[in-house]
Amino acid sequence: MVELIKVSKTYAPDVIALQNISVSIESGEMFFLIGMSGAGKTTLLKLLCSMEIPSKGLIEIAGLPINQLKGYKLAKLRQKIGVAYQDFKLLTDRTTAENIAISMEVSYKKPQLIRKRVIDLLDQLALSDKHDTITGELSRGEQQRVTLARAIANSPTMILVDEPTGNLDATTTERVMKLLTKCNKGGATIVIATHDDSIYRHTTHRVMELRQGEKYSLSGGLSL
Amino acid sequence: MSFWLTVLRQVGRNLKMTWGSQLMTLLTVSLSVLIFAFFYLIYSNMLNLGDKLGDDLSLIVYLDEEPGPELKQQLEKKIRTFDEVESIRFVSRSEAYDRFALQLGKNQDVLNDIPKDFLPPSIEVVPLKNLRSLNQVKLFSSYLASFPGTLKVQYGQDWVERFYYFTKLLSIIVLLSGTLLILTTIFMVAYTIRLTILGRQAELELLKLVGATNNYIRTPFLLEGLLQGILGSTFGITALYILFQWIKLRFSGPGFLNLFEFTFFSPSISFTIIGVSILLCTLGSYTTMQKFLRI
Ligand SMILES: Nc1ncnc2c1ncn2[C@@H]1O[C@H](COP(=O)(O)OP(=O)(O)OP(=O)(O)O)[C@@H](O)[C@H]1O
Ligand SMILES: [Mg+2]
Image (cartoon, rainbow over all chains, first blue to last red; front, side, top):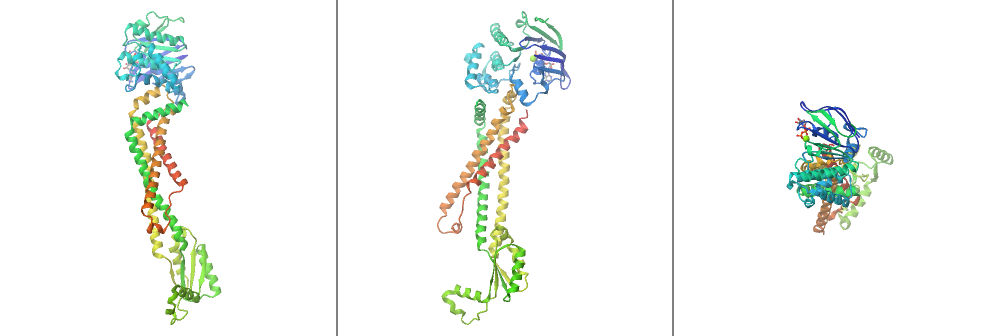
């Protein structure tokens, strides 16, 4: 379970990216985060994986205040959170397989296990033929999927995805959503930031809309 | 198990990426170990030599008069108050004459016309067999010279002094090359590891984001330093050993080097030098990480 209590984020010198956000996300929930460009979606995800620290407020994951974690405990937490970044953060001089393997290597998974998982994921994302391609040579849509594969490879308990379908056609978008739904069925909490309304229009999950850093609305889901 | 596999893979990757500067570092480390060990080897052999030459060292105090038993005791007491000595021996005029005659051997007849008491009586003082007394010989001799009734104090003045300054100079060179060793190893290793770190900024950033622990990120770099230390110092010592054997072979036969036994380091000293170099290299990589890999 993730709790945000009166969270604000101000970037230096005075860009207010998020203001007074309070929300709790249940474990195992799929949660959509929507809003116009610049609304603060990415910022919120960065706070959740403690890539940034909040200027004000408290963020707790499973009861732990994450902005106070350091060193080993922070590393362990991050191993449990898979993030597909909006800017991908791929190592563009390494192959697809190597990029995906990284998130499993840091928790010392066995090499055979890693190899199998990589092949399996690439298959589900229709990237099987890109196994040994340098990621710098992939198209943006392909890179996006590699990023997603890396995020979910280590079977994290929470998956944060930032614009997972921005560069994808309808069929591939469906593939990606199918994979994410599968992860969610497997028990993972999933937070998706997007402005692609095709993926949340008919959803039964909760959708939170941000406007200029503030919580504008929270709708859907069985809890409401 | 999986930890070490991953770490070793990482080390391999690092070495492959920066093998040029890695090689340079290895060379520098080997060379500075070689230089240091070279001078240290000469120095330690000189100390050995000093011990050996010290064995033959004695001070001879020539007296103007044959001392009586009481004076002998007084003199002996005075000598022992300055420093502990190996032995003190009084040589009377007649003993000195006999000894001289013995040395002349067949040519003894030149002594025929000379009175038997022409040689002065003397005290032979043999100082303790260590370099400390060798260095103190000068002080000791002026102390003995201040005794009443002393004509002259004799010892191998020339070589003792030269030897003393030579070993002193050597010890300075050893210190300097030791400092050089410490500086080069720490800085070169730190420098190459810094290169690796800077070349992999993006990857290290990502590793932190996906939850790599400090150990995961740092161990490969520490291992890299360790490897540099092991290989560099082993190469250095081995090179010196080969050089040593070559010189021995080359200059064997009658000559200067045969006057005294030149010996290589004992295994324990070799391993100490290797161990210290490894420690220094690891220290070098550790300090860089403290600076550039704060997590
Ligand atoms: N590192 C930063 N330094 C300063 N300002 C920042 C930084 N990151 C984001 N911002 C600002 O914070 C605000 C929110 O940015 P954020 O990236 O969270 O938006 P977003 O909702 O993800 O937008 P998009 O849909 O375009 O990705 C923006 O005004 C942005 O300019
Ligand atoms: Mg964004």
